[in-house]
Length: 382
Image (cartoon, rainbow, N blue to C red; front, side, top):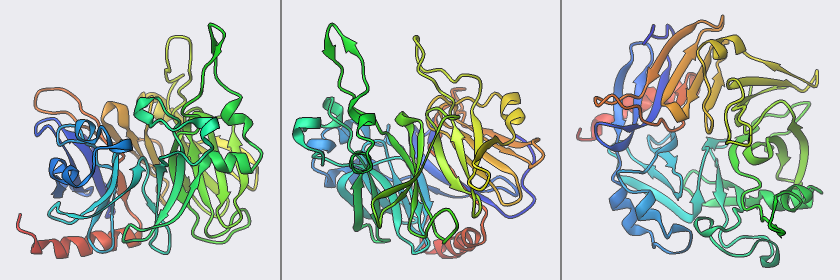
């Protein structure tokens, strides 16, 4: 519903199609809301190449055609589509949804971002865990094991170039107390914290600046309600942000001294984890060393309140793109805060189904990539 965008822009809309009962990705022209292309991969076929042991023990159960999510899909320069899942390998498909490659080294999850050199940054779960067995054991996540989240850098061909446990980064930088000094005591027994990090976004830094260096990465750690600026070249945490956000997602670099953060504002109260008010888009200014809120009245007015997940993107013209993941809603606000359009992933049966970290494409290089893809896809038999 609403008015199309005036300037050229596209949406990679990843959603569960409640009519097909499968996950799809649609390339949508936001100037007229037309679907230009659809990807619908055969997960049941893909899963046959993965041994269902260890961390992939439940792959067929959780990542089949009827349940798999195409999480945070990314269009690549060679016209492929890269995506992860909840508990799956990292996969890349062509325009016809045929598998190009999959990295089965570990489970890859949450965000997918590319740096200026074309390398891919994705969170993963290291298994077996890289930390000492006497600290974290060796059970897989699905069996109550420690979630050893890692930042991973891969080549465009899917080969791992760098991998580092975030828990180990904490230990190396004097933050081990945040891993093993939390938890509860029930009946006198300490409760082991299995998922103290919950890495959900890696944002690579592509340029030198006063506050960071090319090659640094911003990390969003949901279960710490923390955002880090980390330097892989020296294994040092350069900056640590906490305080005004709770269970946040999606860190973006706005310019040479500002970042934005999607604040879920979800707090663990006695009866669950509600959103305490509404979701927020928070800007941190490294020069002023202060936080501010972006179009907060608009988010309040439209009751944006996804408990988990969620995405935000402030465009160069000041417009704001949002995904309210849990409730299947995508919103686009003009820079003045007015709602331009909204999409609800509703099926013919009236039910609303999830969206899966959709991506708005508006920058010059993204537009060129889309145009190149559209020119090339005629080779595929649709």
